[in-house]
Amino acid sequence: LGLANSLWSPYNATAISSSRMLGSAVPVASPSPPVLPSPGRGWKNQGPGDSPESHAVVSPLSRKRPDQAEKLGAAAPARHCWSRVPFFTKWINHLCEDDPGWTPVEESNFFEDLKTGLVLCKVVERLVPGVDLTTKGIYQKPRTRATCVANIDKALSVAWRTGVNATNMCSAEDIYDCKVTAATRCVSEIFEALQMRVREVRTRSREMLVSMNARLSPIGCALSKATLTGNCEALVDDFADCTKIMALLVSAGKASVEDLLSLAHRDQTGRLHGAELDTVLEENGRILSQVLEANGCPILLAEKEFARPPAPSPDTLLLQLHFIWRVTLGTPPSPSPD
Image 1: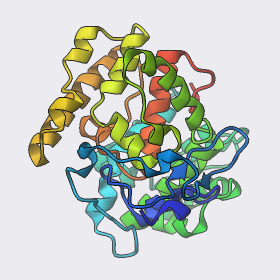
Image 2: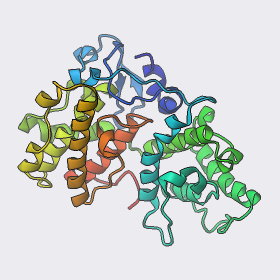
Image 3: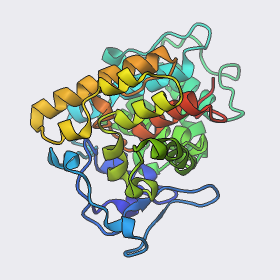
Image 4: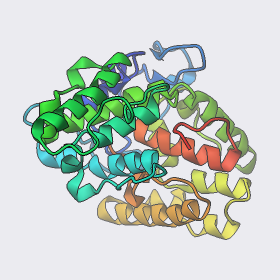
């Protein structure tokens, strides 16, 4: 794959946000797939031949569309950045929705909503234990460039203390000036560093997948061995058609067998290509989203994004799965404040 070393190192798992967007699962091209961390162990790469799973074959569903490599460099097209906005909008609103007086961030106004710094201050407050910016010197009604930039600086200073990847960060002025590429890269880094690492979502991913598999195996819907050993392409492929998630809900009494049967299964989607396949997978995502909503599960992925999670992938998918894990299995502490 050519990205395993940068994607899955202990301190630079966010490299995908500035290197490549995995819009779909792609065939495994490296004998060294990334390995999900177990508690007490950092991210590492599995050496060639360490296990038979390192040579796992990705199913035909993963090969329906060529890989889409996207870079968030200085000249990145704005559309590549905007493709991340729906997920980040839902993520931020979920974090902060129970705050008195919270005004939801809007997709169409995402970068403008970041300009005052109040949104970013609230995000870091929610994700970094012990941080209180609201009562300690931020401007509650910033109306000038100087006051807005000061608020943004306070939020970024908290993020810097958590050990972010410096190459993905930007200045407060970049965010105030709505520089789309720089701001997107920075928000992606905050998501990965604070939500996925500080809140230990990534660390608990192995535990989550093993727990899910324990419910799925007895009903003939086991996760692939490659997924359980940390192959990110296999992870995306396993959950692409939503049937395994729906099977989890059925096993937990959160959905009916009829709900599961209403989805197009792998034997059906395996015969489809291109736009026809996309349409069917999006319909599966729509049905699943309705069931998740009925169970009070936060939904961060759009209907089409269950099959092709937005960058930074697979972390966007992992966070959604953690919310589903909590709803279906009654897990301990959630990956975000309640």
